[in-house]
Image (tube, rainbow over all chains, first blue to last red):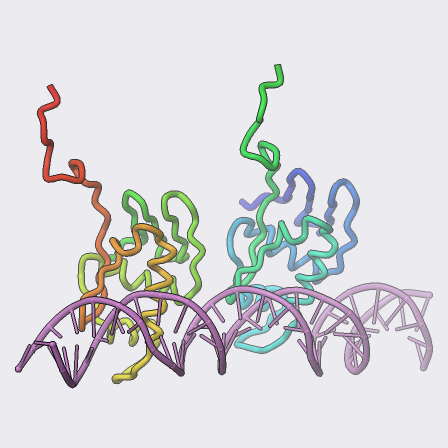
Amino acid sequence: MAPARYQDEHLTFDFASGAAHCDSQPMVLTRKEQELLAMLLGNQGEIVPRQVLLSRVWGYHLECRTRTLDVHIRRLRKKLGALGDIYIETIFGVGYRFQRYREPRYGPSFGPALATA
Amino acid sequence: MAPARYQDEHLTFDFASGAAHCDSQPMVLTRKEQELLAMLLGNQGEIVPRQVLLSRVWGYHLECRTRTLDVHIRRLRKKLGALGDIYIETIFGVGYRFQRYREPRYGPSFGPALATA
DNA sequence: TTGAGGTTTTACAGTTTTTTTACAGGTCTT
DNA sequence: AAGACCTGTAAAAAAACTGTAAAACCTCAA
């Protein structure tokens, strides 16, 4: 079965309650934001098409030109702070994808320049 | 049924998602590029006439003078790097053909020039 | 009913992708 | 070798899509 919880280095989300924490600070999310985040987290690493999000979260079917989804994505990104743009990736012409945070193994360069001993 | 995946020494392509990798690096392909590549890979080793590509990927029917196909072929070749011209062959007056990569058995010459012992 | 918070729409700016244009450069036939 | 076709390419134009702020619209509890 699906895990009841998402958790990584920075972000935590409880699917049952919709409670989220970012860097140990509770995130205040509205209901739609929770549902949207849940959809993305529930499919982490995979592209979720706009159409699917609009259908599952909003119940919209068929094509309809609304910016609602974009606005909600924006608010989620904002509440995720600096990580917003890292976590939520835009797939042009398709939808969005949540990418789990991964601590970089090395610094910004290609590896340890010097042995520490 | 058709295979869900193309894979050789250098190139990898997933027909379902359209995700491609070249020499282990993910290739960033636009939708049309994905569709075009899929058509070529799905018929690897066989000539796919321009008309067929224009019809299947673009929905163009009848003759129409557009350079769209050529431009997209060019972009695909470019993203395939040095292999672009090897993979995608132009069949003059007909169309294009994707040729699977084959590791050369010997060096650039016609065979071992010398016995190694 | 009122207003405070939540949601959707509007309007337009900014991006990215796709198509067209305009030629240069090949290829084939005679 | 010349002319008729085809393809390659860069750059411009057009189309498609997303980001954003702000206003309008709901809804529900007090």
